[in-house]
Length: 161
Image 1: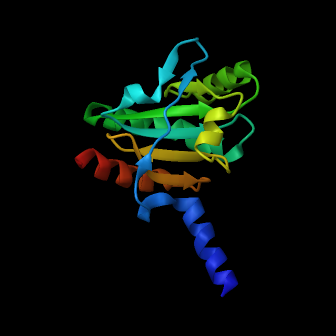
Image 2 (image 1 turned 180 degrees about the horizontal axis):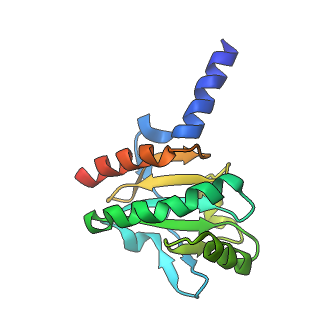
C-alpha cells in the first residue's frame, strides 16, 4: 500500500500538483531582470501567468525553458504570460545561460531564493500556473518530455474563464 501511495504522489509531483486543491492567492513579489527592470507579479493581474523556476545547473530546465517561449507567444494575445524565475546565486550566470538557451520569456532574478521559498519550490524545474484573479491553480514539479502539452491544456482552460 505504501508503495502505491508513493507512486501516486510521485506521479502527481511530476505532472502537476494543486489541481484538485482549492485555489489560493499567489504571493506577490517584485524581482529584477538582468537588465535592471523590476517586474511585480501583481502587475500581471488580469493575465494567466506561468511562473517557471529554473537554474543554469538544472538539466531538465535546459530542456523545458526554451519551449516556454513559443507557448507564451501562442497565447499572448489571449492574455497569457510566462515569467522565468532564475534561482542561480550569480545573476551574470543567469543572464549568460538565458542567452545561451535562447530564452524569449522575461527572466527574473531570485538569487536570494526569497520568492522560491514563498512558492515552496522544492524541485527543479518547478512551475506555478496563476489565474487572472491572482490565484494559484496548478503546480508542476520536474519535467518530462511533452509536459508542455499538459501546461497548454490547463492554460487554455484558464484563458476561457
